[in-house]
Length: 371
Image (cartoon, rainbow, N blue to C red):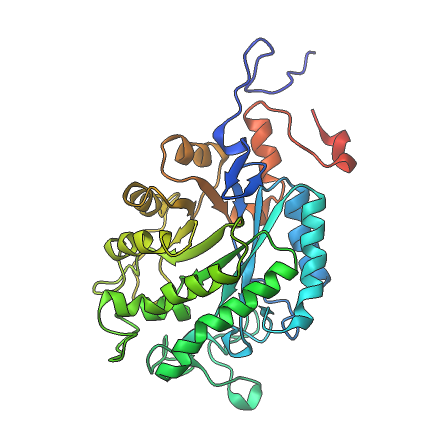
């Protein structure tokens, strides 16, 4: 019996490397492919410190061939944590453990970034598996701050509206975390302005009813994010890319929408952002999201069309290599970010190569698992 080298490839067929697996440049960063691991909260830190779990968790994606690994939402301040178990970069003590992870990723061919975040009114909550909603002050919770007074939902903490002075000081907190990220060896940072967290709360009129210079008009509601991008860009190395994740729409009438996202993209490109990571939702429990494979890809495509100077990353139920390649071939995005698919199979990039009839790039230690 003859066993074919690969079910989709004949030995006399020319092999064309798909865009998904081609090397790609993100500003001054050379990536081995266009596959990114989407940031996904693990809620497994203590005092914001990375540990053995994080080393193994993120290390598997480097061994599996990801071009870019984006580490989970990492709090820029203690009150910015979603839960007490979030990673942090508010202290120099948190640099060293993260540096072990970046060293490992680099040793195995991946580039690695970190998502800088502040949860705003979605802070001080239980981690998944430990309960739902707010943690009281008596049980270790903390005061929650946001664009405006109020709660995400009835079982979430009620936030205090930030003073104008507190808002004006916030960009420097993100910039300080970015400086620590550089020392820790990260290749990029991503500013988290999506999923109903603090920066998104300022963007959306559903969560921002301020009357000062940070509320009301589009210019005012975007001011904090723009100032944060400027502050981070000022300290982040010029040759390295700066990413911003946004929710392109709240999926709620009267909220933040795609038209505003397009306008924001045009502004951010000239303020120093290099790539927009396009997600959606998370701000309001009334959201009506049409969840299906590739459901967010049209949002990324529209932004790429309207702001072509900005790189665009698509994310959201991208499951198969052919789906990912289709997005790239049709010009809907420049990179694809995978979340659940990578959790199910950390070696997804290597499986993709096999499905396209290409010998996968494997770590030396895994060489016997090749063709």
